[in-house]
Image (cartoon, rainbow, N blue to C red; front, side, top):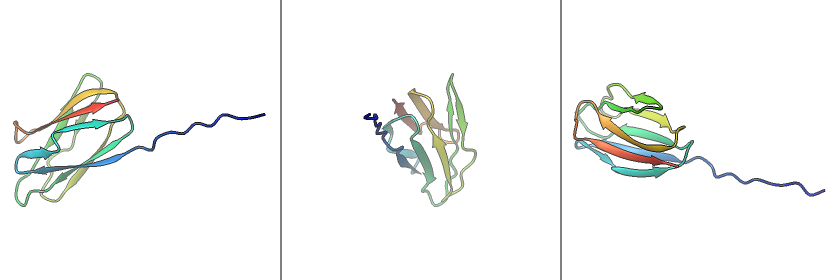
Length: 96
C-alpha cells in the first residue's frame, strides 16, 4: 500500500537592519512561521520596534546599538512594524 508524502517548506529566517532611522528592507513578503530578526545596526541610536494589530502585538523594547530582537510570524496578513522612537521608521510585512 503506497503512503502519501507531504513536503513542507522550511521556515525562513530574515534579518532586518535598523540603521539611519530606516528599516532595511522596508517591505517584506513572508510565510506563516517565518522569523524576523531585527538588528540595531546604528552606532549610537536606540530603536524600539513594535506592532499593534488586532490579532497580535509585538514589542521589542528599547534596543541599544548592536542588540537584536526576534519575531516569529504566526498570523497571516499585512502588518506594519514601527519604531517608537523614530515615528517615520516603518516596515511593512506581508504574511501568507
